[in-house]
Picture 1 (cartoon, rainbow, N blue to C red):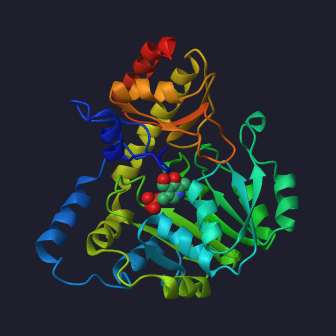
Picture 2 (picture 1 turned 120 degrees about the vertical axis):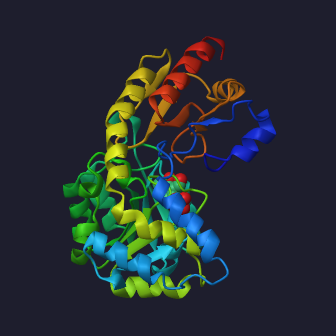
Length: 354
Ligand SMILES: Cc1ncc(COP(=O)(O)O)c(C=O)c1O
């Protein structure tokens, strides 16, 4: 099975490309699409700048991001998507026992192993709504050297409270918080630990532009951390890791207030619309989402359901390869009203036959 959602080429090889193109619920991308001003920035780069190397220090982009977060430039490192920064972060930490709540983004375990760490799994359970019990989590963390956490977490769509995050930070253990989806929560920056970065020298925050700006094809993310951490990350990074187009797009990010407002308006209606709609379908239990994707359990194996939907041109993300889930789980992205309706009616149609 596919390690990640959103691989349209592989879907087309397997099922053939649908006449109207794929309706992709397998990748969690903002359906409002790329803000036009970003496309203009990219066009300018294509016209004027590709014949030069990009700035290896991403100085302009680092400056706007530091300003946006009220941090120093020394606290910011840009990278080739959040994935690069996750990998780098786990390479600079001294090898040790890393606590990983699961299910979570599968790259955490891979990056931990690549970095020579021993992953220690902390099971998040269906009965607890996949919310970690903080006393047990802290007790386990005490036996480990660090913790890797998605907030909100993929695929569970659970967001930890600020109080819980501060409690974890106060343990003094190494803490890597992946906030790739934090801009796609209703609280936005209020849910981020960025404002508390200076209080926790062992904290690394990873952020992505990928999801909220709908640019998975461009590759852009950044890490926030203590200046010594950022220096260590940078030493490991491939030069020119962030291409000029990605830099130019990122430089516009702090000025996208309208896009953020529109995103919030979309999310505040569509997330719960789809969640409630899924829960009305026979055999499906959908777990309450904090962000733009929803974890679901089906009463049977998901494979035939995913195949039947693919034959209708719709992709969902089977959950089987997330540690802690089995073949009865799947995840869907929240999309536009029309697209969400399309998913719900396709499910209604195919469910009796799978
Ligand atoms: C939780 C989480 N973090 C990070 C990433 C990777 O983001 P990027 O595409 O910016 O590397 C993903 C991608 O799916 C993700 O789900």
